[in-house]
Amino acid sequence: MTKIKKLEIILNRKAGNGESVRVWKSIKMFLKKNQIDFQIHSTQKNGDGIRIAKNLADKIDKQTKILVLGGDGTLNQSVNGVKLSKNPNTPLAYIPAGSGNDFSRGIKLNHVKPIVLLQDILSMQEPRSIDIGKATFSDKTKYFVNNIGIGFDANTVYTTNHSKRKDLLNKMKLGTLAYVSSLIKVIKEQGAFPLTVTTKHGMKKFDQAYIVSATNHPYFGGGIAIDPLATPFDGKLDLVVVNKIKGKTFIKLFTKLLTDGSHLKDENVWHIQSSEFTLSSLHNEYGQMDGEELKPQEFDINFEVSSHPFWLPVEK
Ligand SMILES: Nc1ncnc2c1ncn2[C@@H]1O[C@H](COP(=O)(O)OP(=O)(O)OP(=O)(O)O)[C@@H](O)[C@H]1O
Image (cartoon, rainbow, N blue to C red; front, side, top):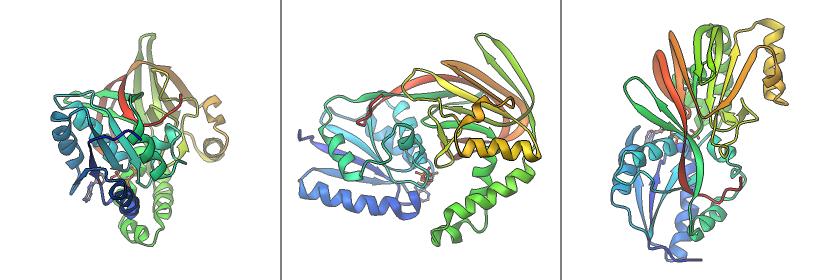
């Protein structure tokens, strides 16, 4: 194993309802045993990941690697922090320790044990480039590793986060139950909304959009393959728009979504792959980015595919 000088570790101790602390204990033991120098930077609140990653990337040297230990939200913040720094192409290493871990699933690293992943990360000489999304809002630019959703999935994220029972169910290791009970509420409450998609080939209008996902890889919501055809290695983003449907048609489509992915062929689903497109909805809707809430708003977002170097042993 090539010796690196130091690991700067961004740790979210709240990620994965304690999973990150469990993973961190085993990693710490390995680092101490192998006399690898490290410094830990714990996030204390939302937004800390951006600040810490920016500060670290501002003064990074060649023998130091930044390692992110947390869930998709912590990785999102770390990528955005690096992009704001003086060295926006600073590679990031990542060990998933969240609840959903959709990014690691999307790059097919979710079955790799943390210590095995750490050994690969330490020995890598060159980082690998992986697609990420770049979203330009009217007032800001944000990068995302998984997806940005408007409507149904975003409403589910919002409803779960604001559910009074969430903390209790999480403590009882029943987080999925919180998600399912939110899902039932959202199915009842989420309405259709108008959406305009603009690509280099023209404009498409939807009067009854219901699920809208601009995605870098197949997964949202902790392993639901909204877009089985998406890959973070093709230099494109995918867009899936599902129209509002009811009753048996909805159940049939939902079953396809949760089982064999054939929903993409359904007449109520529209799917494109493109390096750039714009989404516009003049309707107050919930939004989510990598599982984190975007406050309800009228969306007007330009999407472009981008990429970032990662210390991650991925195969295309
Ligand atoms: N010390 C802290 N206390 C409370 N919240 C924190 C703290 N540190 C970070 N956060 C916030 O915790 C949230 C969740 O983090 P993260 O997404 O990494 O974990 P997760 O939700 O368990 O994983 P996943 O997104 O993969 O499901 C993020 O919004 C992050 O800003």
